[in-house]
Amino acid sequence: MNTIEERLWSYIDGSCTDEERKAIDLLIIQDVDWKSKYEELMSFDLELSKMELDEPSMAFTYNVMEGIRNEYAQQPLKAGINKNIIRVISWFFVVTIVLMLVLILSTVHVTPARITVHLPDSLKLPNIKNLLSSGVMQGFLCLDLVLAMFLTDAYLRRKRQQKEALRP
Amino acid sequence: MQSKLSDIELIDQTLGGNQAAYADLVKQHQRFVFTLAMRFAKNREDAEEIAQDCFIKAYRSLASFQKQSKFSTWLYSIVYTTAMTFLRKKRVDTESIDDENTYIQLESQSSGMKNNMAENRSRSYYLNQAIDQLLPDDATIITLFYMGEQSLEEIARTLGIEPNTVKVKLFRARQRLKEKLEKNLKNEVKELI
Image (tube, rainbow over all chains, first blue to last red; front, side, top):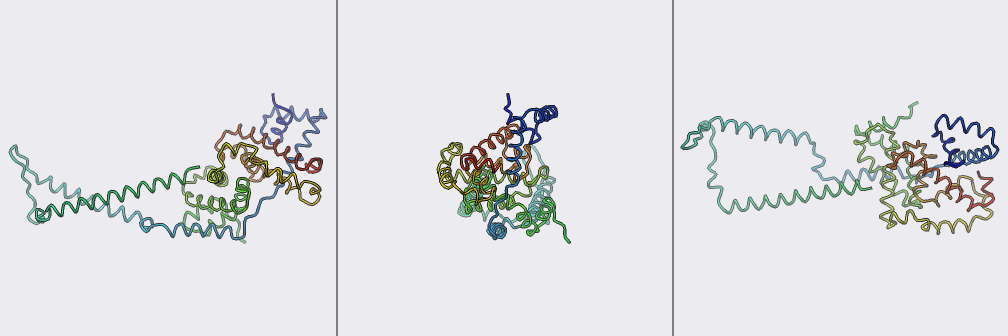
């Protein structure tokens, strides 16, 4: 069962039902205790709603904007690059690779014995056998490994920062 | 004469690259955000740090603001989570937040200076002093309801709880506030309220 005070606060806050409001209206008129309690709570409510807000320092807005500017100035260059440019470049490569695959596959003749590829005469591929010496291959794989580690590290750092920023 | 732009208009301008619009948005909300931060930090330096951090966080995620609720409700939820994180960082864990003993020091300070001060100080001063002695959750609900002009539903959204829970918490917070006032001011409380 709600106390007088609890019911009166609901009435003052306007969070009670219409029926409850009408019942409390009557009680305030008819009952002296209800009336005095209602007046006390109303006066308290009025004082609370008249409270003043605290004022931050004069430089508050400036400090916030400076904080934002600093944060964006510290961003790495890659974050400032237009993503559309990156998309166009990636699409160029994707389309080129697809076209080359289509071209190559259209010239493949499959026979049970062997597969022969007839490339157009105008297309001359470099002789890559000379380039693929063991030293070059090892260097290439090593670079790949370093790059993969670097990208994984950057990805994990970014994820951790996002998690920290969202943590309540 | 140029009319004051609404929060949504300022947000749209900010998202369009106009940083001055965000500065206006900060000016419109800084007093309340700072007051709310004061409820947790209890000193101006820390409150300013929390409030500034909130506005920077809000700027960072402004594009994710859905515009379905009021900007202030969204901003106050950022203030609440930032302030709670701040309290945790200050090694005041959630158990001690619920512990009235944390505020014994504040209470004893205030009870020592209660004599004959009612004449000299404003009513707002005494109310703020009593609110400062409340638990952060109680102080936040009272501040959001009376100073932030937030409805019970909006407060529920800000704090991530049910509106009915807010109603009960608000009732208890007001009761505790009255008790603090009575303790601080004894007989003079009747004149105050």
